[in-house]
Image (cartoon, rainbow, N blue to C red):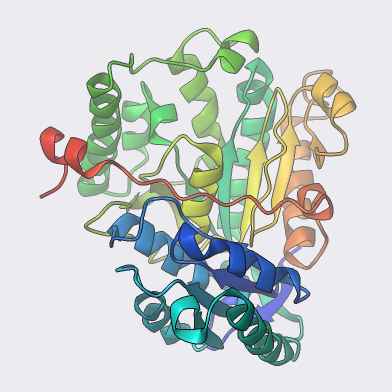
Length: 392
């Protein structure tokens, strides 16, 4: 497959879905935002839980989510007294050319009037969005996020390497892949750095992983910490887990490190493989890669994860045949065929690649069919970052 069918946006990007996004800049206005979204087909509401002040990490990820090409239109639902205003977010999304509007509870007369006005405005946006039609596009318009969660020993042996094959195939077609979770790169710095396109990128890889290790130590947590689920799943050290985790990114050269902090929020500037300085928290990690432009996610899990996302299709791949049999309602692809010898690594990788293209063209993932709309934003602590010397 050398093309997929998507929705062209005014800024030249291509959406895989035609979502209507209702953003509550703060959790104080999330309830009316949810009620508005519930009354308009294709709408989903999101918010954040870091207060009403301007936190650049939070702001960048809300804006990035609204700018993602999977979003056809945006309605912002504010309270009215917050510093992180709807207008601030709207003016940054406006550059995409997609339809957007604002309602404010304190200004518009309270909950009932705001919901009424919001539903009316969102339905107007929905009508405009409904005119979009799927068209064929080359795979160089596709940005894939790769993620793992609930890992076990089969993840590094089967699922992650198979996703790595699919990642390589996409990049060979001119596409882009983002891999995150620097905590799960501990002990692999030298391997990743060798794949950097230049010394500057190599240096940034070492710096990114070192910062994460320092954060862990500052919290009194061993930088080689692993979750109980990882240990129960047969993983013995963080290095073992990391060696398997980085396989999701395939074998291609690393183009750069995408900053994700209060100073900058980067998006890929060319096709190829990119590392994002993100978090090991699964839902937030996916959210941050989607905010950086990824329209689709390949999510590997050994023990079984149910995660989806508010605006991006999440394809679940497990390398554990028992997990696939037990959680088939959640798993899209069984990569355990590699371990039982019935299928080769390359064959499974090609199968994942084909499934990604089919999903990009409109086929629902199981998480979508189940109605999963996970969304979370992660932010570093400003005081801790200053004490560690990571921000001004």
